[in-house]
Length: 287
Image (cartoon, rainbow, N blue to C red; front, top):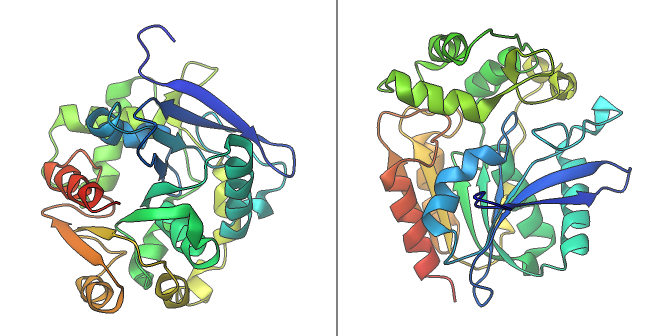
């Protein structure tokens, strides 16, 4: 492992893909943190979580099929939540892990809601990063318009400047060093030496009809969550999770607390001290 803070792990899906995760060691007597990233993201998104909580707890950062070091799907029609949930079933079976504290960003949070409603014994607590049972149509449309339209860049600075141009509304106060840090989480150096987004562009294929159908109502899944500690992190400027939905979650979902990250849209990076402190507070509530 050398100076690397984590070990690389893999597991096989039912359709034969080899998927990847980062495994940061920690206290075996405490529930591990299982981190699932958003639609286009990868294990690097959770570096701040691992830096803060690794050692005290085991931190496992998954990469869904078609992201990061996980293999790309042979059939793009499998890039849907139902398949991701089946892949997670294979992960639990392969690792023998019984129960976790889930931290899910956007799509990752939806998967934890689905897991909690159908496999509640797996969750000892859960963090939803800027996602809830009501997805705002404007935000979903924005995501559908940019996913799958990757391009290459000659240098990290070129890539960071493009990212700033496309995401300035999400992080209006970022410095160029912060844009570079985010760029290195979202992108990777390709075989040709260019820098590009680190996911299979075909994950956009199942989203072709987003503009023609209303966003899903996920209250059924969220209402079915087990009675364990829950935390919702919301970006103040989010166009995916509204303030009204956040308030409804606090009122309707048992043992649910919330924190809002100022001057941040979809999604908070989890570098924010407000987010990390709130996660620490959640962990204090875990039996």
